[in-house]
View 1: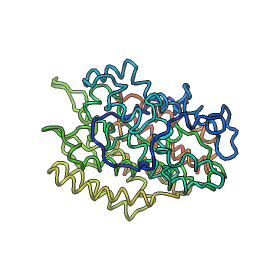
View 2: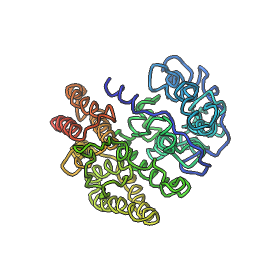
View 3: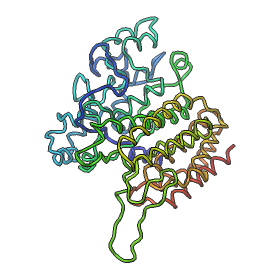
View 4: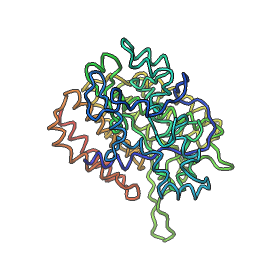
Length: 442
């Protein structure tokens, strides 16, 4: 329950923007959208019960679930009519949020049959005109559907790229969450591929699924998600059109807490910022948001030690380059992007031993000093929970053992419940307690 409550808190509404279109992630090009209604028949995905022989067939019911995060996509357009969205739109001066491209780019999608569908089936699976008939034809295959325009969401890099379009941002129209949108009241965006997949899950990973598609573990989804998120953030940062706003840089790319801290003029005031050894950024300089760098560094030390050293060096070089000039920073970003892509290819197929090692690495003496800010700490606790789930799914630990140590994980979640009450020392202690408890299950 604690995980669910936290996930609802952390799971943001989709991003907003006015950026023009260009390809940043896989998109279907075969035909146009046909709409959610085309999937809703009782012989298709519109049943009340999961009675299908191959797929559940009650997917629409899950997509529309009002009581669960699984229904968030179906509510995406509707929330634009609520008071909070209208207040944000008024501050931005963009008119009705339910029709403003700044909002509908994610709360509806770039190609939807009806705005009221919200984030419908095709927003994730791709426009269905080219594969609607083939995907239920006798003898049809997943590979054939993908060739006709369906997105291969069973591939972690493809799924991550699709999710990131709205849960981090892209350079397509209406899909880049500028700092001004956050300043107007939009929720802070965060992303973790396995957790978000779990929240929206409307499929069964069984023997039939594994025979037809790829079935990556939770640990693989987490690692690939972190690598893809970092590659995306560096790619958007390297886009001059998105990275600058007049004489100011686009602040969306920087660590929120580095500026949003308590200040005071009293003689006894002590700054609350803490030195971060993974950055090397001078005091008073906003650092690039490095939550994914922290996670990847810990995973790479376990899964790819040779690449880990290069990744750490290039991460630090990028942070240092941010204090020199934009051309220097963009050149350093290119090297780090290459590392992220390489790690996405390598970080898969972890066994229990490596998964335990990654959990330990997230709270060891190398990684712990990097938890100086809220965003990285949020990623850390989600990572520990995801990796523990991966161990349970694979039978390396029992569900009873997971339940027994759940209170320690809940305390780590509680340490990042409120960004305004975040305390690095308290979080580090809570995380270390949780990872020690998990380590005891070996």
